[in-house]
Amino acid sequence: MLNRPEKRNALNHELISELHQAIRQSASDTAVRVVLLSGAGSDFCSGADLAGLQRAFEAGVLDQMADARNLAQLFQDMRRHPRPIIAAVRGRALAGGCGLATACDLILAAESAQFGYPEVNIGFVPAIVMAILRRSVPEKRAFELITMGEIYKAADFGLVNQVFADETFDIDVDAYAGRMAAKSASALQLCKSLLYQMDGMVFESALEAGVQINAIARMTDDCKRGIEKFLRR
Image (cartoon, rainbow, N blue to C red; front, top):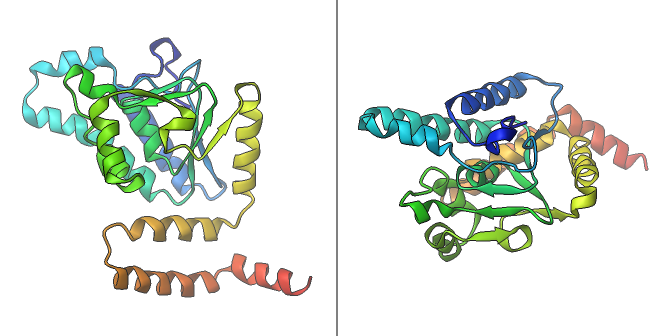
């Protein structure tokens, strides 16, 4: 859980480091079936801590790149995580907070949640998340999202998997995550790995990657048990 409610869970170096640690620990814990990322308080994440960015203005370009690379590495670790990562968004997910939600594998949102990349409105750029956004929506939609800087309702954002009523949001999120957690862990891991492995592949290479994962999946204990159970019905 993002736990800076007094700052609307704004991202600073310390919070990103804590997220890094949590992501890496959960990746190595075989008892973890699904990772659920939420925000303490009324908002998911309001974006980068602008006070911290202001203090960094005097830093050189190499220091700026090192700071930006810290967030990029977090997004990469999330993409490589063996389990599904679900963003549960209440309130605002803006700028870097919207990027963090986008970096998750799935987004569940309360009906009143708000999303957007308003960086352009202050002369900034949602640069790091663009690699993920470009793979998630059509090019022209991505262009509009990053250049208009507007705020969208959950139902209109285009990246939300499920929208739940505010009143039952926590119950609905738990039920959704529970259904996913009940699936085969090995199958979910292979699905996620293959889907993202296909980024940038030509058609023939993507098919060959599918052949290899298909063969691996057949050899897992989960698949063997699942087929035996199906045939006994």
